[in-house]
Structures are given as structure tokens and as C-alpha cells.
Image 1: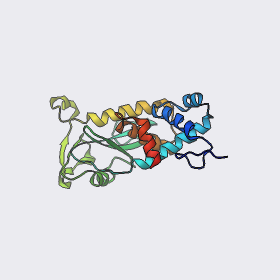
Image 2: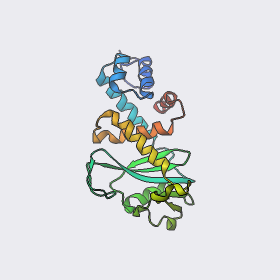
Image 3: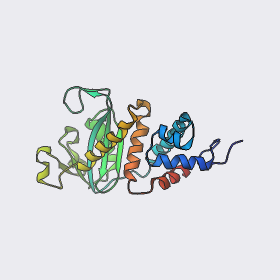
Image 4: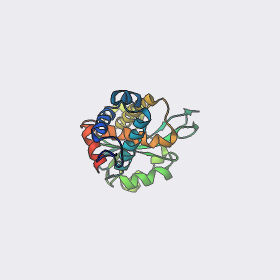
Length: 220
């Protein structure tokens, strides 16, 4: 007989047990830890994590709009880098583009490469004209002023001379996300987007009760 659970349809897991799982998920315990605490099979926990991460991915696509002081940057996840040229000589790495509103939220998107052709459409689609965009000197960002934005370019060697000219926010997010993802000791490329968007979600709601937010996301 199937137990009633408004968060999981056609599930044999009771709502009480699912809420117990979700509390441990909210504090970012791994599957082994959650399995031991809930007495649920590790494979079952894996499936529950997959369901929750899929809902987070869907939720992350809502109300995407940035304005004001915005930081842009790209980063590379997994694999090993060969050479030192940005965006080139990358082996088995996944390129990710990031948009961060200062004092606000971050948005991440997996990209094919860090070219202007790849990045400009994302920028125009998600960032309101008139916003001030902060970037480093990567050539893909050339011409943003002609697209209707104010553009501040960062010279890392002189970054600290002007406290307003920096991309510390998005760079700090990259560092935090990579440290968090390292605990998984390797992520299947197919599922990487789920873990990336979970990191984005956790960062964006870092000052809120994540358990309550997750309940709302799952109800929606």
C-alpha cells in the first residue's frame, strides 16, 4: 500500500520519513550519512537526492533578471587543464559562465566555450540595459558599452587600488562551489548540471531556512 506523501507521488516513503530525509539534505550531508541517519537504503537516498536536485534545476530557471552592479566571469570544473591560456588548452573541463548581482544572487550556466558568440546572447537576455557590468580583461567582453551597458574592466594587478573595481563576488562563489563539490570525489558529467545548480541554489538562499525553501520548491 502506497503511503500518502504530497511531496512524492506514488511513493512508498511516508511524508514523515521524506521530511526527515529533506532536513539532512538541507544541511548538505552526503548520501551515506543520510542513509545511516534515516535507516533508508543508500540507493533510495540517491534517488531522492536526484528528485530534489531536478526540482531545484527547474526552480532555478524562474524569474531570471539582473540589473544594477553585476559581475561576470567564467570558470572550469573537473578534469585537468593543460597550458595557461584562458578558455583554451582545457582537457575534460566543463566551462561555466556566471552572473552575480552584488549583494544579491548568482546565476550559472554551462557553456560550450568562453567566446563572445557564446556569452553575449546570455548577457543580453538576462541583464537589463543600463546596468554596470564588471569583468576582467577577457576579449569576449569587448563591446558591451555598444550593447547598452556601462562596463568596468578589472586589471587584477591593480585591483586593490579601486575597491569598487573587482569581481571578488563571483570569484568567491567559484571557490566556494568547487570546495563544496570536491566532497563528492568526482561527479558524473551527465549529472554535473544538477550539482552546479544545487550549489547556486544553496548560495542564493544561504541566509534563509533552506529546509522551508525546499518544501516550497517541492510543493510548487
